[in-house]
Each structure stands twice: as structure tokens, then as C-alpha cells.
Amino acid sequence: MVGDVLDGLGGVRFSSRSPKAEARSRMAARILDGSRIASDIRNEVAAEVKAMASGGVRPGLAVVLVGHNPASEIYVRGKAKVCEEVGIYSEQHTPAETATTAELLALVHDLNGRDEIDGILVQLPLPQQVDSKQVLMAVDPAKDVDGFHPVNVGFLSTQRAGLVPCTPAGVIEILTRSNIPIAGQEAVVVGRSDIVGKPVAMLLINANATVTVCHSKTHDLPGVCRRADILVAAIGRAGMITRDFVKPGATVIDVGMNKVTDTAEFQRLFAGGLARNAKREETFRTRGSTLVGDVHPEVTEIAGALTPVPGGVGPLTIAMLMYNTVKAARMRRGSRIPEMSRV
Ligand code: GUN
Image (cartoon, rainbow, N blue to C red):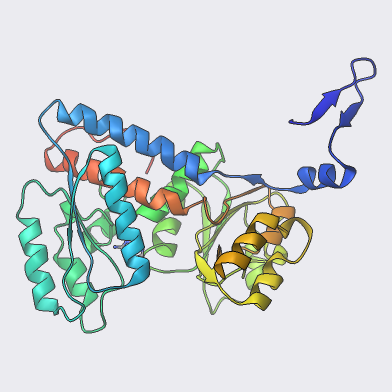
């Protein structure tokens, strides 16, 4: 370990760190570096895209962004940038905030019919006048790189080859690439959304975990969570999963991304112990906000392994979207599916 020296005579361990820093380093959970894993996956996808180019095929992704939701605009910019990095063709369609369901259905039908488009992603949320379910149902399941179409949901639940939602697929990649066993483990998923909670639970079942899905009506939520060897938090409430929810040594996967702007809330999350973080305090002071997961930072003192926010699950979502676009391009042409993913 950096900073450690071994006494050659007695084998006594000395450290150049202060006793306090030493104690901290022993207690902190292993941090699962999602940024590094996402970068590995992007490199694998780029190699696959290059191989396809030699056969005259370039995977293509169309992103539909309706109106001006600032968070969605940031996500979509990120997707376009990574497409360029890995060599995937991408285009954006930006209907006005006032777009109707009929207009979006016409756009989706057009994209379904274009051979150079392998993946279609309709960025959510859509404006309230639009029937989102109808629009998502209209996407050709073979081009549904979000994995939201009922056909792909059915493929996932019956373990057939299909397109798997990106964030849940990313959770499994983090676990497997970090050599964390899933089969036979108790997994608890907090949150039952169609986008994360339900598909992540299904993937964990398919990987032979024993899975419990919790939600707002679950009795004794901390007690149920404490059973988990693998705890997945996908609730959307900053720092809700405190130390009482976590079995010592458990792996904790934090899918939450919450913007905290309130100083009292910041204090609750980052006041003491290992949760204190000078860099984050500085960012909060200068920007007036910080990105926080659903897991309270104090959990690092209890968990065996933990995904950070930012830099944990987040970067995997776009990496898996790239993977799904290549997978769709391959499947549509009846050719080999890239091996890189275990999902
Ligand atoms: N909005 C937030 N997350 C997602 C996602 O994974 N896919 C789509 N289409 N929209 C989103």
C-alpha cells in the first residue's frame, strides 16, 4: 500500500501516514471505479466498430430530444461526444417542446425505416402532452437501444438475446469486472422503476442471485437492506441509504444522481468521519451545488465495496448505450454479437 514500509527484521508494519489517516484507510470501503470500467468498455466498443468498418458497416444512433430540459440536454451532448469517440455515426432530432404524440410517432416511424440507423433513443422525460408509452412502443424493438420496448423487457425476463436497459446492464458490468460474485448472493434492490429497479432485479435473478425488490411500502426497509450482500440503491433521494441499511462488508451500488444545493442538506451528508471531503466542500462553496447519490457517504465506513457518485454507475450508462448500438447493428445484420458483455 502506498506509504507503507515493512521492517525487514521483525516484519512489523510501519506507516508514513498519521495514525488517524491509517485508521481511515483501513475502514474505508473499496471504491469501484466506474469511470475506468466505462473507459474499458468504450475501448472495446471502438475496436468492434473498427472491425465492422472493414466490412463496410458503420453503426448509427439517432437520439430524439424534445424541448429544452437542461439535464436531458447535458446527457444528449454526452452521448453524441462518446459516439464520435468510438466511431459510431450519430444524429440528433430536436422537436419543439410543443410536439404532439402524432408528430413523434411519425419521426420514430421514419427512423425505423432507415437502414443506416441501428439504434433509436427517445430521451425521457417527454413533455406531458405526449403519450410516452405509445412513443416508446413505436420504436422497432431491433433498434430499441434503451431496452424499454415490451418485446425487449420480455426477452430479458425469459433470457433471450435482446437489448438490455443501459444503466442496469452497467451495474452488472461493474460487479463482474470487479470480480464480485453474484450467484448465490442475497441482492436487495431499492426502487422498482421500469428503467432501473425492475431490469436490474431481473438481471440479478438471471445471474442466480436471490433478489428482493423494495419500494415505498416495504416494511422495515433498513432491516431488509441489511440482509443484502449486494445492495442496489435506485430511489432518487440524496443520501437515504445510511449506515443502518448496510451489512458490514456488503457491496453497495449507488444508482442515484441527486443535485444538492441546500447547505443544511450538505452538512447532513458530509459533516463528519470518512464522509468529510475537503475537495467536495470546495466545489459546493464555489458552484453552490454537488452531485450526490442515494447512499449516504458514511456508508463507506461499513460497506466492503462501494460505487462513488460521481464516477460510479453514471459513466456506465453511456458506455452501455454504445455497446447496445453495436449489438443492434450486429443483430440486425444477423451477425455475431460482441462478446464483451455478460448481460
Ligand atoms: N432519461 C434518463 N435516463 C434515461 C435513459 O436511460 N434513457 C432515456 N431514453 N432517457 C433517459
